[in-house]
Every structure is written in structure tokens, then in C-alpha cells.
Image (cartoon, rainbow, N blue to C red; front, side, top):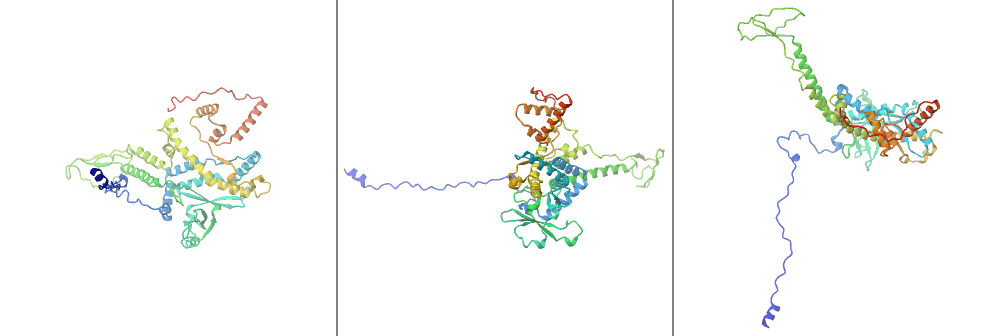
Length: 486
């Protein structure tokens, strides 16, 4: 009984604490080799900065890049050829419009009228100029203006403006202190509302108009450039990484030529193996003797006749230039054989493999041109054309441009082996893995127009009694790729 009472009235043990006791942990330290500054890499990364896109592309920086890029394109044959090739491959003979509405007759009417207007203003030439300007200047501006001399019912014209001419003079900064980036005025949502276009090019000699400008609404200006960083408002030359390489290529070539010329300038030299003040006859040092062609002569006693060894160009001269040129073309996604205009070191397979990346880049450029440049031009052209009585279908007035289905055709890429490509195309069509529209689009042609033309040709051949082409339905065999790399 006493033991029971002791157990009841005995002090209960204190409950176990559930408080978490902090555990001392070693600090975690992350480290990247590329973020470590050492004595060896300090100079290499000395120019690295944390500037924003617009701060890094300040007007004075872009001015220097443009001037140097233009200098190389104007004086370096490789730079000139690369930029011209890029523009020709991207634009070709020019884009072609295909309307995709339900009105077939209206589609043909719009396409023909736009094509006639594009030829009248030389649109393809201006697009090639814009593509060259993006490569050597970083950007190009196109101003949509009215030109009464355009040989077309639609008097719309496209006037190109260099990047130097779109700028905000210093006295004009006050009205737009927070929304202007070197000639481009933004609203508080980041939309472009207007441009400041100088009345004369800064490189002209008209000093009195250097600070005079026009304020042009954004709807009348096309700004064509490549955005490489978020928040970037102005473009820099695409060949910017290659500018020092172009300079090195030219300096190396000139140095090799100078060394070869120096060695060739010495027709012959006199030398002796005798010691100074020895048995050889005395000869005036550095004296020049004019030699006549096809003659015999007698040398001073103890002297020999020799020539300077021509050691330039070295055996690695061509390889060095190829490597530099390959590095130059890489920033444009251009293979070496296109940049150099030389495919002697290529085989069939390697040539096609290198061209795939290049032509994918071309298609990306064409899509951007169609979306940024051509759609803007087409919208302005339709806005002007629908005001002309009985010129275009009237239903265009009731359809917003964004709902107007259309597409742009570009020149197709010629295949290295047309026979194999035609066979592969037939296999794809027979197996229903492609369509006529896609196959014709790859060649830059409208499938409907081509089929109508082909139908007319076959009908005329039947009328004239000419033999028709083979229209058998046998499925062709896939192309033989064996030995294709020879």
C-alpha cells in the first residue's frame, strides 16, 4: 500500500524537449574556374564589363565598328566577297508574294499588282543592300515615302537610310530624357513611337544641317537589325568578331609579299670566306654594281657570287590563311568553301554537310526579312492600293492585315546532284511524306502556278501530236548513295 502511494505522489519526470538544436555545418562554397581571376588571365579579361546592351553599344562605339567594318569590306577582297555572297544567297532574285485567301481571282490580282510595283521600285536590289548593310553596319533603316515618279499606280516608295543618319542630336535630348535611345523614341511600354532622322548624313559636308532632324512616326520606318541581347535597341556589324582577323589576314599577306620582294630585289651579293683584312682583295662595303644581262664578268680575288635565299612564302602560308578565313566565316554561319570561293578540299558528302547549316541560317534570315521588312511594306502597299478605284478587290477594306493569309517565296537552292534529288523527290511524293506545295516552295515557286502552266504545256503537246512525257505510276527506287562522297 505504501509503495502504491509513493508511485502516485512521486514527482513525474520532466517531458523530453522537442526543441531543435542547431548543428554547426561547414559553409558551402561554389567556384567556377572561369570566374577566377589569376595573374595569367587578368590581362585577357581586362576588357570584360557588365554594361547593358544599350550602354555597350553606345553611339561612339558603334561609329568606330561601322567605320572599320566598312573599311575592310571596301578594301579586303575576302570581306567584300563574303558580304556580297551572303546578300545574294539570302535575297536572290527577290521575294515573291503568294496570297492564300479564298478568292483565287483576287489573289492573282494582288500578286500581279504587287510584283509590278516591286519591279518598279527595284525592291530586290534594296533588300540586297539592306542585307549587306546589316553585315557591315549592323542595321539599316527603310523609310516608306510617297514618290510621284514611281512607274506604278501605287506611288509608295522605299528609301534606305544608313544607321549614321538615325541619331538624336544633343540639344534634342531634353524633351525625351528617359525614352530615347540614339534616335529611337519609346513609350513607357517599350514600344517604338517615332524616330529622329537627321536631314543630312553626318559624313556629308553640310555642317549647317548637322543638328537638323525630322521626327518620323514608327509606322513609316522599318528598322532591320539582329537582336543579340535583351533590351538591345541598335545593331552592331555582324562581322564585328572578324574585323581584327581581316586586319591580320591583310597584314600577314603584305608582310609575306614584302619579304619575298626584299629577297628578290638583290640580284646577287659578293661574299668571302676569308677573315677580315685577309688575302681577299679590298672591296668597298655596301657598294652597288649594276649588272648587264647575259654577260660574263670577273670577281675580285677571294670573293664569291651568291644570291639571297627566298624563304617566303613559307609552306604554311596557305594553311594559315585558310584557318584565318575559316574563323572569319564562322561568325556568319558560312562554310569555308563559300567564303573562300574554293571547294578543292571538299568531297561531295562534306560539302553537303557544311551547306546544311549555312542554308538553315539563310532560311532564318529570310523569315526575319519577311516578317519585319516585307510584311511592313505589304501592309503599307495595301493601304495605298485599296484607295485606288477598281484596282484591288474591295473586300480587302474589311479584313485586318494580320488576318490576311499570305506567304513569301524565295529562290530555291540548287542541288549538287539534280538527278539524285529528283529521284528522292519522287520517292517522297509516292510515299506521301511530302506535298507538291512543299516541294515547289523549296525551289521558290508557287505550286498552283506551276501546275497550271504544266497543264497548258501538256494540252498543247496533245494538240500538236507531240509525245507526252512518261507518266507511269511505278514507284521509283531510292537514290543510290553508295560512293556519294567521291
